[in-house]
Image (cartoon, rainbow, N blue to C red; front, side, top):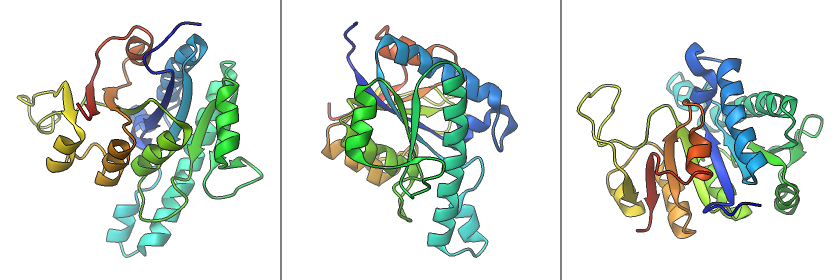
Length: 240
């Protein structure tokens, strides 16, 4: 088995990435493209855990702005992550990759409850593990859930999948002169209030010394280029 710099990773996928060109709901062309990349790295021997967002179905902040109570809105968003997880599981398994979905809120008819020791056993057996329903508690984002699960499973890297090439000094969608950072420290990200992840997620990764790599996964082969070929891609946030 090949040796990789990051043998076990936590991949954070936003709902926006799964919505693809549709902008809402599920774009199965986008899901199949991302799944193909996950299959490629998994078969090469990289152990993969996933945390999936739910913004392609429901955004809690927008609901709060419309008068929905915050805790209720957050629970509604968690259900969106479960829909995404089940879709991703089905597409992965159709490509021959054994997959398990674990939820932070019990839904025993459709998924396992999140149990850390069971999760570790699944990963030791080479299964792709999808963590859904965030942390199971309101007021915590799925980015924070990703940082938490990364620490719990002993991930050596948290890959934040986005639609842009990494972290820029300003919004590259609005500013043609935006500059891409190749690296940042955790404190740089916190001081500059980098919005690619929230402060709690950055702080958790800093405390547990888990590097964060922010990269575009919409280009086929990017995960393999980074994890298998060892190419420098995107922006790395670490203690160095």
